[in-house]
Length: 76
Image (tube, rainbow, N blue to C red):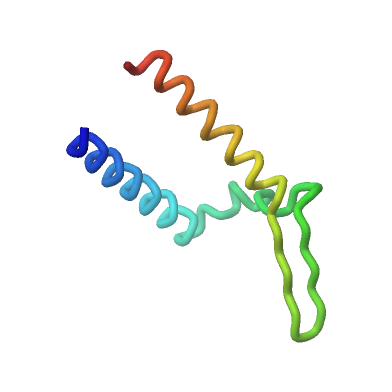
């Protein structure tokens, strides 16, 4: 099982790198709403900045859970 886990981790890293590259090179306009959802906490004052993307991370969790459920259900 360890070789399969290694392949999965490498694949996940590559996907994250590609996604990060797309956002870094200017594809961020597509996801400009992310982190600004109602329920995300942002406090900005002179010399102090606090940011807690609570609802955005809940959304990521739900989407990833759904994708993993679909993968286990239909992918094997």
